[in-house]
Image 1 (cartoon, rainbow, N blue to C red):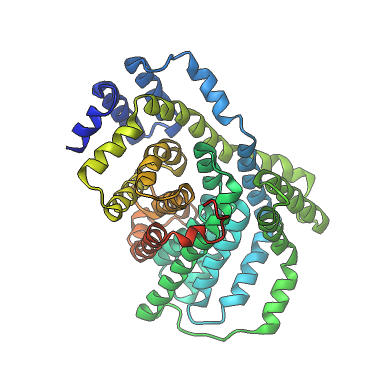
Image 2 (cartoon, rainbow, N blue to C red):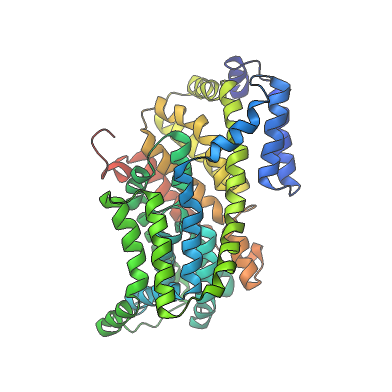
Length: 439
């Protein structure tokens, strides 16, 4: 019924549309790189539907990534790499441990807080999972956590990488939908912290049930002051980034550039970074950036083709013809995002789905900013849900633990994150309280 109604509202959707979509899914299933699968599907759809001239493909590819805002993506990635190589990430974890480590379930809570600190700098969940995982998983196991559970905890905590500003995901969705990244960063502050707190609370509850980490030493003010003093330069980086963005001194791109310069200068002055490290840092960051930008470039022609086929408008009509209950439609949108996050990376999901789902969200009275926060948060759950579960594979890669064993322990964290997603969807003030009145 839904697809029949969708077909009636679009330009004769048939196998000319469904064939390329199934082709993309099939190619991804056979481990073809996502950017290549999307690119092939976009070209095939353009050829068989003829809604746009194929000659525009090259122009679309380059124009799609020729944006000042996207310069922030490689800069934030490089900042995270410098943070790890200079040892500043260790200082952040020491501050987190001194803050919560003395309480019951304190090391687990400190690990999640450390992920949050790292998220405030790198904007990448995979980088946070790798960095924090290497430093904390063995400590968690020594404390009494089962190894698969410790891996699941770090994988879940690292989801804050795309949910706590500055986030690469918010830069991309802002670019696609024409919303200022600074506005989205402001709106995401409370939801991002809520996700982090939900993971902390879940770990505390699991500790109460299974007594993984029973002993506690209490909070030590001298230890905390010492950790903060020793980590003052590491803490300076997120203060500069977020303070500059929220105060209006920097744009996100400028903040990313300042963050790179700051971390490099600190590393050079402390002697933890040398000129010989630069080639390795640049190559490492370029590899990560080389995964993200081709996906954006290839996804944009596909999104434009879908728009030319009136798929977003047809989807809105098809859904609202089945139900006009805003609560049910929000659940449907969340379900689509959760399912999409399970099988595909965040970047293509944002580029392809945001133009389709935004009109539906607007139809039920959801404003653009709230929709973006809900979308990115829902997609963030996909980082710990099979079969894709990027964070699960990252943690598995650095620990050797089976992905299936780690995935079997993430259920409570998925539930905690879903509760936050529902709160964002049904309580607009969570994502709009700090925004100007126009929102």
